[in-house]
Length: 181
Image (cartoon, rainbow, N blue to C red):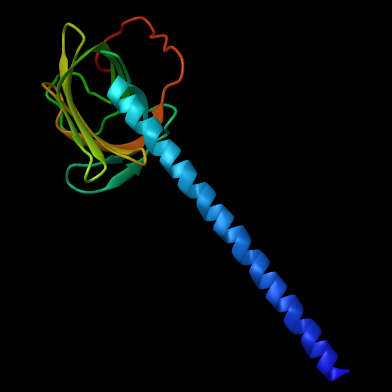
């Protein structure tokens, strides 16, 4: 009787282990396919110049980090049109206090580097709305994570991190507004 129970237990253990191995192999295969699809979508959106970067963290110049709400802090680039809406904390060179960056303008890409060996894209552009110009540098990884640096005449250099979201369909830009609130 003991021998029969041991054989039954061994059979059940082997069956469970083999079932778990098959499930984990299928899961890793699926996640690899999802990663490849995500990398292709990021590459396509960067090359076409149509994407949204949802900013979720701001890095202070003298150290420190603050979390942001991605729905309220973003950079949109759509074939030469740019919308920047984000919080700002740092030195300012204006009489009025600057609490955020809110700019709609034309983006002129001065340098676009594809570092395919590292899986990175570096985009340097100037966003101009007629009265002000911001220098924006985007460092985008192939998985969609992104770092953005923004500097201008009235603000100091500030760094953000976030996630790139590829755009599907058409973007409708709101009417032009001022630079800073």
